[in-house]
Every structure is written in structure tokens, then in C-alpha cells.
Length: 448
Image 1 (cartoon, helix red, strand yellow):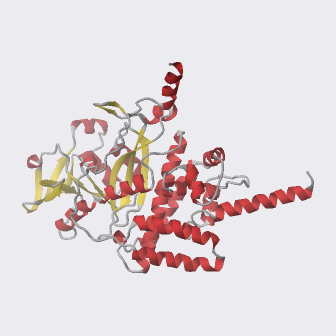
Image 2 (cartoon, helix red, strand yellow):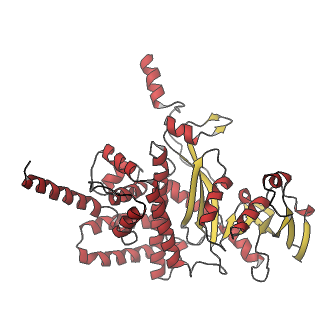
Image 3 (cartoon, one colour):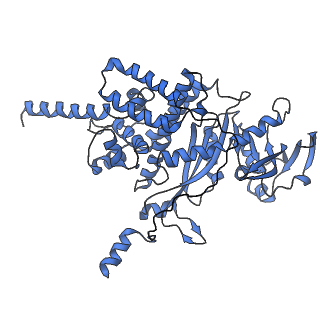
């Protein structure tokens, strides 16, 4: 092959590479520029050859996987008007190390927080909701061994499950950090990895799974305040009262159990916790329960506002729905352990990009970001990505501003105290359930 042929092949490869990189999620390039991805790769010591599928193409391809309708890797490729072999895509995903995804996630959270830190705070605190969920995956032996299965009264689940704990901003629904592990790992166990990543003076808002004297002490050790429902085994009437503001608002001494004291002899004798009694409608029924918080000053932190923040914690259901349904994280497609963690990062980063776009649109038009439709933002981002991939360079800023204008018009009504039953209206197809892997079934069928 002579020099002319080599030069022609090189130019052709560069043309195809530019076409691939310029055709992927252009509506989000303003938020995640190419230079940032390049810098993160260098900071992560990830050096790569000039291939057809660069880290830039791989990152946006995996984010597109969550946005595409069926959540598959091949559909994400075709979603951007491209075509390619699944093997090449799998190799590109494998080459990109997990540390790049982690640093990309951290950079994005810092940028979003820097832009919106002064607007979405309550009395000087960032309000952080926390909760857990589970995601499923392929029934590969490697995944089954690492993540494990759910054991119920009906038997073991047919697919591996990973447990995920999410920490998110209650006002913007931006995921601040997440941690995934095997199914047997508890939500509080995963939360311990998240706590050092949060900011001092953050207020953690959680349900009774994140309650208990030992956990409260751990939160305060890293400088984090908390608002939770009290643990279901806590007998409030037997606690020593330190100060009473009114019959439904008091400060008590909370002691540690002997087991926790044996595990950690450095624990203090007790901690002070403020208890606030509240009544709320849960699953259609009114319940009276106590809220525990480390915000002890009733003048600086009124009880009514604290009750409101615990109510807003239910936004986690919306966030989990967005991640698992709208971004197809309910069933992950990767077949390796590292691939599962990378894919989960890609879905979380993609969701944060969409929420960041919603925040920019809300800021431009002075609107409440909670009232902007995520579904409409997804559709508009997809449509404008195709427009921007063929538009001349001088027209891209105008298209981006038009996108923000259209997102601001896509609002949802304010419906407080809205409750709906979790019931299925349409019947599912009455196919029998396959309780073994398809490979095992094929082997049994062939032997028969």
C-alpha cells in the first residue's frame, strides 16, 4: 500500500469519526462539551489510540442507550442515525474505564451545584433525599454470583438483582451520588459510601430505614444534619426529655443499643434529638408518627417546615421512576460486572443532563423546575439533537435557545396530595414464565 492510499484511508477514517461524534445528542453538547470529556480522560490517565469509536462517541452512545425507546445498545446507535456492529460497541465500552464515568459524574454534579447553589437552599442547607431501589440484569453466571438473587416465599428470583442507594437534591431532583452493590447489601450499608461525598451542613431526609441512634451519630460525625421518621421500634414515651417546646415538639436523649456500643466503644453516652409529632395521609390512611431531626432550634427551624421536607421526600418515587422507566435502568443490558456499573453511571449521568437542561430552561424563563415535564424535555432534546446534527455551525446557539424556550412551555399541573392506587388496568399477555435460563432450556429441549 503506497502513501497515497494510506492518506486516503486516514482521511476517510477521520470523516467517519467526525460524522459519528457530530451525530450524537447534540442538544446536550452545550452542557457536556468535548473538551471536558478529553480533560477527564487525561486526568484519569486514560490514553487511547485514535479509533473510530473514541471515548466521546462511547460516552454519548451509552447515554443515548437510556434515552432510546427500548434501551438496547444497538437501538441507541441507530437512534443517532448510525450503524455499527455490536462487537465493536462492546469493545469500546470495555475500553473506557469506570474511573472516567465516576469523574464525569462528579464534574457534572459540581457544575450543576455551582450554577444553582444560591437558589435551591433552605435556610443555608442543601436538602438531600435518600432512598434505595433494585435493578435487574441478564442471567449470566458471573452476574448471578456477584450480585445475587432475591429469595422470597415464591422461591428465588429468575434474574440477578443489584441494590442501589441514591442521594439526590430534593429541590432539583439532581442525583448527587449513588452507590450500587449486591442484593444482600443494605441501603444503609451503601449509604456509608455516599456520606463522605456530601457537603458539610447538608440535611439528609430519609425514611425509617435510615433512622437510629448509631446512624444519627454517623451523620453528625461527617457534619451532616438529618430529618427522618423515627425507627419503628423506638418507644418515644420511655425517652428522657431534655426540653419541651410544646406537647408535639421536644428534645430527648437518644441512647445507643448495647450491640452498637460493643461494635464501637467510642460512642458517646447519648445524643440529643428533636422529636416532632405529625399526622399525614399514607396510602390513603391518616397516620400519626414522630419525626427525628438534629435541627434543635425551633425558632431557626420551625416544625411545620421540617414536616414539609419529610413530605417532599416522596419525590424519590418520581426520581426512581424516571431512572428505571424513562431511562430504562430497570433491566440493565451489560453482561459483565464492570459493564453493569458503567451502564448505571451512564443512566444516572443522562438523567442529570436532562434535569440540568430543565434547570437552565426554568432559570431563563423564571419558572419552577418542578413544574417542567421530564417526558417533554426528553422528546424535545431528541428532536433538536437531530436538527442540530445537520444545521450549520452559526445556527447552533439559536437552536439551543429555542430548545430552552420550548422546554419552558412544557409544564405539568400542580396537583398536591394526589394519590392513585398501584393497580394494572390492562392485562399482561398470558405467557408462561421461564424459570430457568434460556441456555438451560435449549439444552433440555435439544436433549429431548
